[in-house]
Length: 74
Image 1 (cartoon, rainbow, N blue to C red):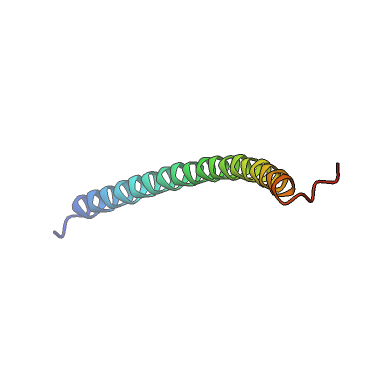
Image 2: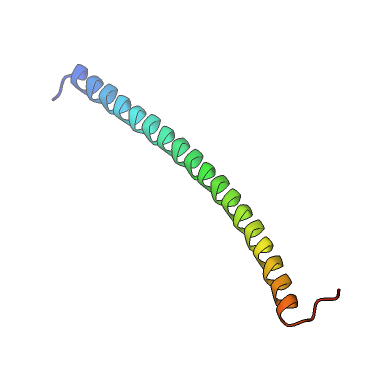
C-alpha cells in the first residue's frame, strides 16, 4: 500500500464511484420531480371536474327544492 500507483487507482476509483452516485441521484431527483408535477396536474384536473359536477348537482337540488316546497318564482 505504499506504491503511488495504488493510491492513484484508489483515487480514480473513488472519484468514479462518487461521480456515478452523483449522476444517479441527479437523475432520480429529476424523475421524481417530474412525476410529482404530473400527479399534481392530474389532481388539479380531477378537482376541477368534481367541482363542476358538484355545482351542477347543487343547481339541480335547488331546483327540486323550489319545486317541492312551492317557492318557485314562476
